[in-house]
Amino acid sequence: MNIREIEYITIPVSDLEVSRRFYHEVFDLPIVKLPNGDMGADLRKMFLDFRVVDKVTPISFGLIAKDSIADIQAHLINYFVDIVSDPTEKTENRRNVNSITILDPDKNQIEVNEFK
Image 1: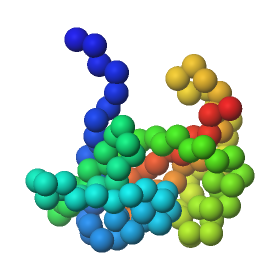
Image 2: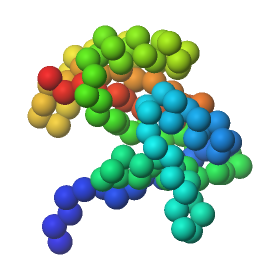
Image 3: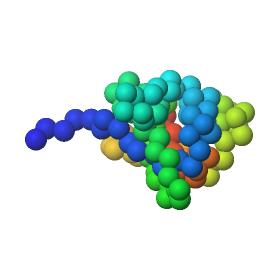
């Protein structure tokens, strides 16, 4: 077997409309509804599948941004996003990155990385 990419990640959410608005407005991601009724954010090669649940058990995942970490932080502050970790420099998957960690409305932890 030769796996190369992740097709989708299921994100537990409590309110579909709140999550739709967050991922569209904060990350400027197109929101799509699939034929099976699922809704989520389209990242071209990957899909963030919003799954409404009664009790959210938060997950964590990372995103790659093309903006500078300073612009990312300013954008997140402008949208009043809950920042849990200020920008830090670290090695991620054998590459140096600038990273900032945030929470979505359901406390899912998202690490936004700027690769150097």
